[in-house]
Structures are given as C-alpha cells and as structure tokens.
Image 1: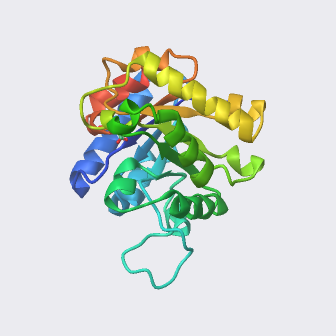
Image 2: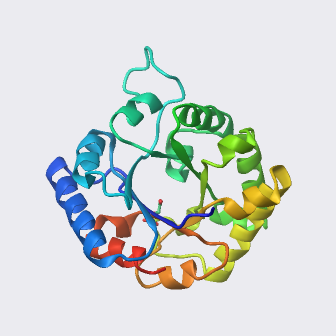
Length: 253
Ligand code: PGA
C-alpha cells in the first residue's frame, strides 16, 4: 500500500535547545491539528536524533529519520555513523543521495548502492533522492539522469527490499532557491519514475512506492503539488524549520 509521507530535512540547522523546542511544537501541533493519515518524518542532525526520538515518545504518526549514514557496519571510520547506530537510537528512515551529499561530499551512485544495502540490512527505510541540475534539464537530459541514478544507485535491491524504499524527486535547481517545479513538471517526472519501477520490478511495486517531491515546497504550493496523482508527499527543507509552515504542509493533503 502506498503511504503519504511528509518528511522534514533540517539539514545542518538548530542547536540542541532549538531542536527540542521545534520537535515539541511539531508533536503538539500534529496531535491537535492533523487528522489525515500522513506519516510525518523528522530528520534532524545526528546529535539530536536520540532526543528528538524521545520527544516523539512513540507517537504513531511521527517517525525519526537521519540525513545520511556510512555504508559499513562498524570499524575505523573516524567521524562516521552506521545504520546500526541509527537504529539503536530510534531512527526508522535514512535520507540517502541528497544532492548536497552528491555535490559536496562526492557521493556517487556506486557509493549510494552500498549505503542503500547497509540501511536495508538494518531494517531501516531509505529515502532515496534523485534529481537533475538546471543544466541537465535545459539540455533535455532529465529522464536520462534520473534513470541512471535509479538504475545504478537503487534498482539492485530485491523486490522484497524495494518495498521498504521511498523515493524523493528533488530537482537541484529547486532546492533552497524558492523556485519550485510546477505541479505539471513534478507530476511528469513522478510518472516517469513510477514507469521505471514498473519496468525494473513490476506494476504492483510501482503502484505501491511512495514518491516524494522536494525543492522549495511550502504551505502555499503543497496542496497543488500533493493533488497530483503520482506525488505522495514531500521532502521539506527550509519550511520544515518552522513548525507552523511544516504542519500546514502536512495538512495540505
Ligand atoms: P528546500 O530543501 O525545501 O529548502 O528547497 C529541500 C531538500 O533539500 O530536501
């Protein structure tokens, strides 16, 4: 069954106290105001995962996600965090392949393939990000780029494992720029992604996969985006840092 998800990617923002304040606001507002069946995922920085998870206190509507993890299980990898560690502090989702990781930390499809495996091995759910640059879009390479990101980074997993995967389409030119893809542009790409899933797995897998849109989503445009048949929610950056905006986006279904 396809789920609706709104995930907040806090990126490298907030101090401990600010993170605590934000998560308790979100928890209270979701409790008081949200009566749809959307799953909410909060993705703070590593140091706050444990306390954010405690603040959520088993609220069934809200899950915790990490923004990255290492591909190995343990060992001499100074500064890194494994999927098993994330699981042990209450994490259930892990964002992988965000364009900022691809761009600033040289994460390529081959590395992401290993990270996807590591996350699934721990029983966690990857939120696998794909997206084209403005240049690629202008050169009509969008579908080609997305196809190779999916094929090389993700489509090696089994049917059973694939059922745990969430995909996020995030056009790089729309991230943090205030420039959102139109709902038609996003829908066109989401339909393409679903087609690729059908081709590599089967029609049922395609119908069941949650595909999120990300890139300058906000309370003003979420309704229109979420009304598209192949858009199942959002991966929200900037607007997830304000509880009011984030919860209004959750209520946009
Ligand atoms: P944005 O970021 O909503 O600030 O554009 C989205 C993301 O990078 O996940």
